[in-house]
Image (cartoon, rainbow, N blue to C red; front, side, top):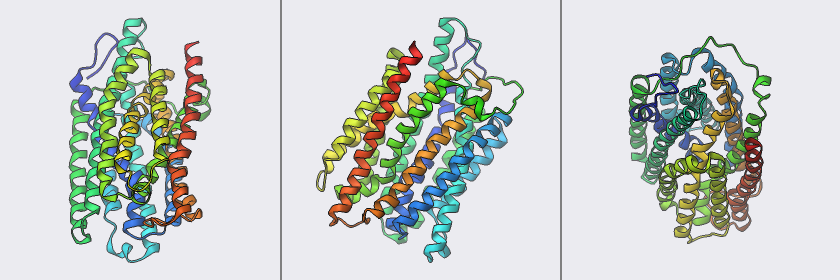
Length: 435
């Protein structure tokens, strides 16, 4: 289905487009949040070396994203072979991360190598599929729209595509936060079987979503012959560069607590049995808040809406720094408040990116660089594990005053500082884009 400036994309076509956001989010959450804790607390890997493996695997992922973005532009975001191959690789590596073979489990060195290889392949597959997916959604806007009515329709289509993508993504992260957390709490004899079933279920969801995307989704606009765009050309767009700075600090403020939340729940709040409740409430709040952020963005603009989301996030994480053992229900409120703010972080930045970039033929390259920034912050966040090890924090030990203080500062206080920097830059960006 092709869109134009006079015809709105049908809601059903946007739903079919958004469905792939569900398994993509399911793959992202375990890799960034649950896998570090799973391999250290459950499989016994040392914290410091695991942090280094995470850092180097994520740095590899960071470097490759611009090249993947160029390839997406070359072959087209709707290239069936590209999408099917990347989806198949994602399914295989998803299973490999959760189900390391027996020979790897018997050796710390082999398990570290297995983790590094599976992470690198999973990152590659996820980037291949996700960048093409984002470029597909951004190409629903018609660059020939000239009058205010046509441009308003195009902008609302972008918000609609982003809203459905992130709404399904929220469902994905809710599933991924509840199911593995519940499985890990079971005895080890049955956990392997249940994790296998989880990996199979993930594969089924990917197949359904890929079929929906290729058969029923809104089609991206026809493209002209692609010429590789240089990095220097991308960086000549001053508004794009300004938005990248905001995205860097905001992503870092999200990536650090995402890497440490399970450690914070286990050792600071001391309520590991409520892990699924905390994670699911966070993402359910995000899912409920997502349509509100989209609606608010249509009324007051994406910039102001995102600023409000940042303020809510800062207030909630400052509150988390004051909590300790036995404050589980208060932390639940923190999860809900910060989850509401998450919807703004998910839905609004890609819309702003599409607004400031007029070159719709090279959106893969722009999203590749955009993804590079996000992945680089995740790599930096992986080093937070090594930092905590240097500060004498040890997982699953509740009687370590200095270690728990270091955990609280790194999990709750440091992200607030980065979020405030992002808020300051966004306010400046909003003034420059409106002038």
